[in-house]
Amino acid sequence: MSARESRTLFVGISQLVTPQAGPQRGAAMRDLTLVPGAAMVVEDGVIVWVGPESEAPKNAFNSDQVRDLGGVAVTPALTDPHTHAVWAGDRLGDFEARVQGVPYETILARGGGIRSTMRATAAASLPELVTLALPRVQALLRSGATTIEIKSGYGLDFDAELRMLEAVRLLQTQTSATLLPTLLLHVPPAEGRAEYVQDVCLTLIPRVAGERLATAVDVFCEREAFSVEETRQFFAAARSHGLNLKLHADQFHALGGTELACELGALSVDHLEASAEAQIAALGRSATVATILPGVTLHLDLPAAPVRQLIEAGACVALGTDLNPGSSPLYSAQLALALGVRLNRLTPAEALTAATVNAAAALGLTDRGALVPGMRADFLTLHSADWRDLPYTLGTTPIQLVVVAGQELSL
Image (cartoon, rainbow, N blue to C red; front, side, top):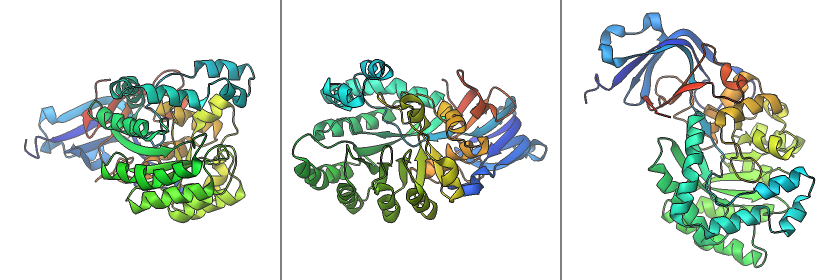
């Protein structure tokens, strides 16, 4: 196919709205570019021109290279930088007990909680994990997320962890979304904790890196999970094997994990519901992305992460679904964006930035999330002419088309 034949001119765009390229910090998260009556040229999956339709180079295109979108709004596609989409079993009994006021410690003692998910996931075969996870990934894609991070972390034993990461590799062959696998060190074993930490550093992380099963290592740093010092050991091993660093921190207690992640240049710190002045200041000074997860706030009735303070401190804030069976059964990146406005008090503009370029930055990606020349042509068309329907709409999808590298998906 010639360069001319691989080009498409998209017209009929009532509004094209985009943040600036690259991670946006603080007040810059509100700085969107809005082009009314817009057009866009895509070549080989990359945007090469954006501007008013009246200025579009129409004579350079054959009629079959011009795609009229019908007068609707266009935004960048979303990135979901935090999911646990590979799991087996369910937590429906936990949900029913929790809404009746049963403490989580009691649920655990009954055999429920995260340990029940770990047992079910460890018992599932690789084909079973793929079969279970594929509809979740496709739901996220339909909701506008064309780039999706997927963590392990429900295996505990190494074979199960590797099987989860292998499932992500197989899922990539069955979806048009870009999937980024992360090795999550979620909870320690009931016995032999010190030996487990050592084995992770000396065996699991090197194997994951050697087989290219993950792009990053994530650690859950909490009182019920891993300590700051254990997190430091995991991070040292990950970095020595060329893997990026991510962190679950400040979900229930601020232990110092956020400060460690900022010190070591982690890509992101996620959750942050319990973050206070010291953690907010560290993220404001750091390039580490602050990823908020409003689905957890909604589902567990936790305090919302302090987004306004983070933005005022100059932090780079991202949004994710945290799709998982226990604390955030949220299958829509668009709904996560809408909840970020309602629960975390993001403005619509800040929420769009958080779910696009900043979410991509939380995964170490700078080639997507903005509709400007040189970026991947991943974008959404809405059912309406106003882009604000994306954060406004609840209970149905405002998205008409999902476009990946210039190709419209059949959803």
